[in-house]
Length: 407
Image (cartoon, rainbow, N blue to C red; front, top):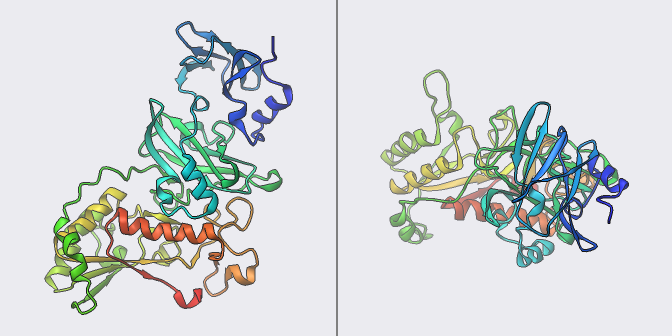
């Protein structure tokens, strides 16, 4: 009879040092047997819930293993500290990303990054959950952490997709509103500060800075008339009058509260239309950590700031503008980003998004980091952000900020 797991492998899993957890955890065919391995810290007993429940052998410090009667469906049950809990094993699911995605990601030419990276609520192999994917090519290990696993990076280490540098995992049971970050072990094994998702669609309210799972599907656009006539409205000889607005200071609710996207959909759009403007230009609405920057130091280029509401509510504001006959332009910041530890700087323990040489990669006037536009994956990331705003939210144009400093 084969051993359930060798000691060195079990120790690497326990300490979060194994770079390929899917090669160890979950069901595996070993010498004609199906061996199931589970890591569940805090459990005293674990069972595989098959038609005939199978108790798994406790191997110490959260490791459990046993033999199943072939590749059969199962879920898991654990007991510990007087409580019982059940869950679907994320390590029994295959990868989500397909071969074409893997090829384009490896080339750094995927122009729809928001469709493959970030956090997506979906049904995968018959289970409801959320798929997480992040680019961190120099990382030795990447995990999703959050309240759902008590921020323990050993519990949900991800699968690395070969030479793409992308890590992914599908976690059953997680959905809209899940708060999460990535725990990354960089080159040499050092743990980095927890990172927000570069392609996350939502964020916590400042000063908190974790990413939040947000659905971006299910749009109910009512702006067909605008979209059908937009090209004519944007002819080079068409009249244009632009009202530039910082949403956080244009107007406040009683008590000083910022207006929501839904409130702005009524009040701002009515005002701009009544004043005869053809377009509204919004100062940056990509998620940013520091209020004093007015959004010009963003960390979430795929997330409308939560200061005014959710992505669905931002979409409703754009829809309202178009129904009022107003175009919407966004200030967009692809030149630099802040040094906040949860952001893009040294994302995988290397200068991934920024130039490695501080003479190229650090902006002394603004104390920000400068994107390495010569790296294909980075320029592709920024182009995908532009496409995201234009396609997902029907935005009519982008004003590119700080072009002089980029040149």
